[in-house]
Length: 132
Image 1 (tube, rainbow, N blue to C red):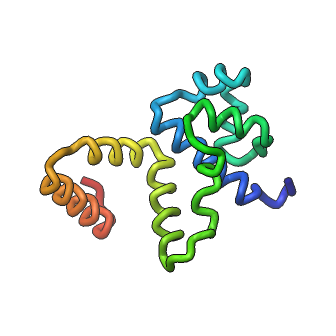
Image 2: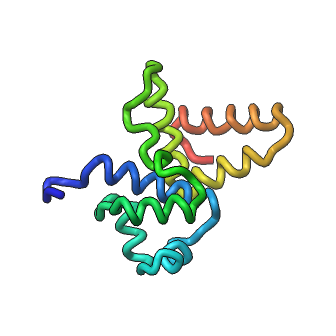
């Protein structure tokens, strides 16, 4: 990897790793232990600072119960206009702790009307640039 910056594919794979780990409620330490690594190494994978080898990616996919292809989803292979942008936006939201909390909480709501109202509130706050 060059000193000019992270490889965008490594960063994308790492971001997908972080999202899936968080979706499962796993801590970096727990995943690292299962892989026989330090949590710092998992952190470096998630930030894209270190490339994940093919064998290690296979092991991670097994531990996180996703196909290896999961880590490459959204890399500009979409044939639908705007689909990549939406996928990238969802990936960005789920990569944060707050975003993941919002997604989990909204998904847990059974009442569609309440989900819509929460989405309206979040959109209004985002558009105004204000915090509640």
